[in-house]
Length: 279
Image (cartoon, rainbow, N blue to C red; front, top):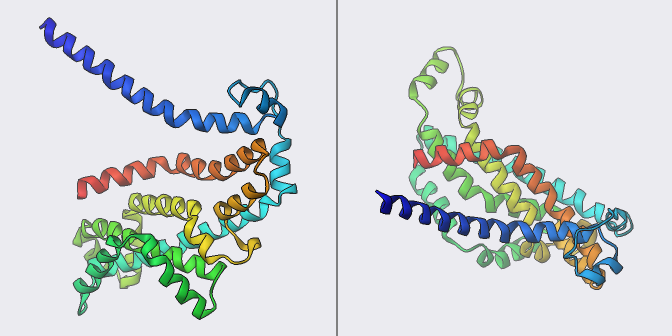
């Protein structure tokens, strides 16, 4: 009895030590970044940002957002992320509902093509996408939204279809007897019942679009249209010696998506848990 109790205590100590070290390795760089962003350059040169800042220097954020015109990149990223996520939610939910509930020739072949698209590494498709958008004259804003929408569709359709497959047929029959059309059944019955999965789709794709860098650097030829991550690289190149300004810019780039996750974490966890049970 004593042996098993001692074994359990040692196991818990090792497990919690490991988890604490992992959490610390993730949290410490984030707090270091915020701490440096609130220091003056002379304070940073004196302690490398390892000491807690005695005063909050908000001038760094003003210089980054206003003088560095970082606000332009923030507005661009908000517009691209919002429009892309809206497109993905509408298209993927309609497609997933069709694959799950409708019958038409070649349905399984088309669905497996979407699944096959998930197996292709994303960077492998960047050059063909760039060549296509260049030929169509859609580089910069429109092309970026279309390309990111295409990237997010496969996973979103697959996830939503698994949820639509689990909906009872009786609900559709009841709605049909009340006079609902197929689109009204999708809108009033299907979508509300797959809300947890929609939360996962929104967070996953918002995170993907907000943090995208390689494709953005490839597609955008005009700096004023660049999203946050691509603009951040341009800003870092100009302010390579101003570490406090760079950390302020990085904090601005990280905070919105963290706040979105905190706001929707219940839907995200509920969707993942339900997806695991469905799978």
